[in-house]
Length: 69
Image (cartoon, rainbow, N blue to C red; front, side, top):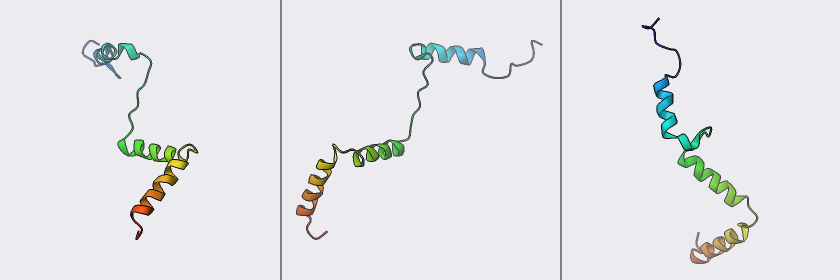
């Protein structure tokens, strides 16, 4: 039996992960892509009532500076 490898995550792998993230025990950190981050940012900006006056002001400035567009 000593010649067989265990199935699953080895103790060494688990132990090294535990040493690195000891302060984050039980926490799973997910990273999202830059594209998803920008998509979420745009969604919040376009769907928040507090931001609407700033968007309107920006649109008016752009129209004033670029009357042909």
